[in-house]
Length: 510
View 1 (tube, rainbow, N blue to C red):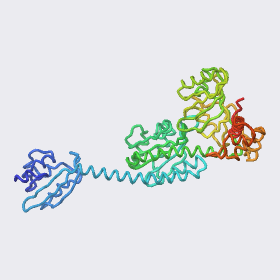
View 2 (view 1 turned 180 degrees about the vertical axis):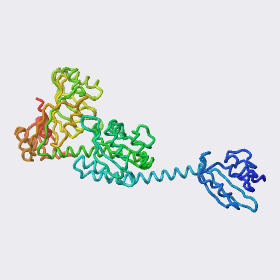
View 3 (view 1 turned 120 degrees about the vertical axis):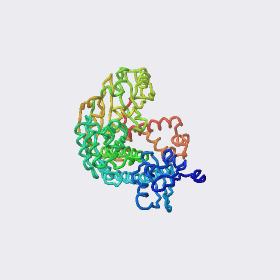
């Protein structure tokens, strides 16, 4: 081979009568061969699906062709050009695997970006529909219909866990379920470990990228999924706080349907859907003319039951602050034990923290503050839409009185706040209530305030004492009333406390 061809930066092979005459070093490296001179050109090249090199030399004359082809035996993409001459041909070959990898990466990222944008719009549409939903069933129907009938996914189904067991109850399916969904339903009836059950139990999404190959999926679903062309599934729990209100199984025909970004968007959907379900339950309770009052017995799975037992104390719930990511903050009246020992015991419990003495009246009475974790029965009741009326914990015994909307599932709530078994229901009764009017609230407040307290509060309000910046100082308001500043502050504190007590309807602390 000529010196300039031998040192060329690409592979060059000269061929005569379909037999290799010469081959430079770059060509030998690319083709992973040694001294191919004398070998048929079709044997020098590795096999490929298209077998284009054989087709170029198959005929009376050599074809003038160029192609890029993947050769699985060497795991390479090769760029090949065949240039025929009078009685011979020259084959130029180079390895373009890195270039192809870059192109495929760019294409994959572009496709993922487009899919993520479409999914984000889809989920935004689903969330928009949750605003007007009035029930758990309506919310779950909205989710499965929009996801299951979209072009992104094959089908979607929704379900929820039965209150006092691990059984999943199917709510419905949308899309093209094929034979996969019947297999899922059968697996549920048999109690098999399907992805949706795992998502409910662990309260986090479960992703299966290859349904037909993942051995954690029941065999019947793997077989049906393979037949239907189903590749991947994302099982999404609908969660609010420590409560799982349901699960959505979304099935797709590609393994790449659920990228990190898409999964993050779905997690947001699960959390907001859980919040929406909780909100519909609270809305029903807020506007219901009739409520159901239920008294539950709490077991030792309640940390406050354990604290009362350890300290031989009586703890009465005075009020709570709305739960957040850190848990539920509670204020408790302590009787029969030193509030300090109660706080120390609280801080030693795994599901309670941030114990603090609010007021210590003596060695056996006071008020404490404590934050409860999401898994505590009291918090679970709040997260399930219950309004806590009273809660008492006395020497290892506990009772929780809650208000629920008439259509609330008491059995489900008992299962949630119970220990190994559902919490016993000690009493249950329906009550009719009428809303308190503004005038009734004002009259009740007037009855609570003394004449001096009412006068001081009204004068301070009209004098813009409560504005920021203040229109009047305490001294100026006190002077207009003919009293000292300290007397005014005493009246204001007393009247404000009674106002807040009327609003929050807290227990009288004596």
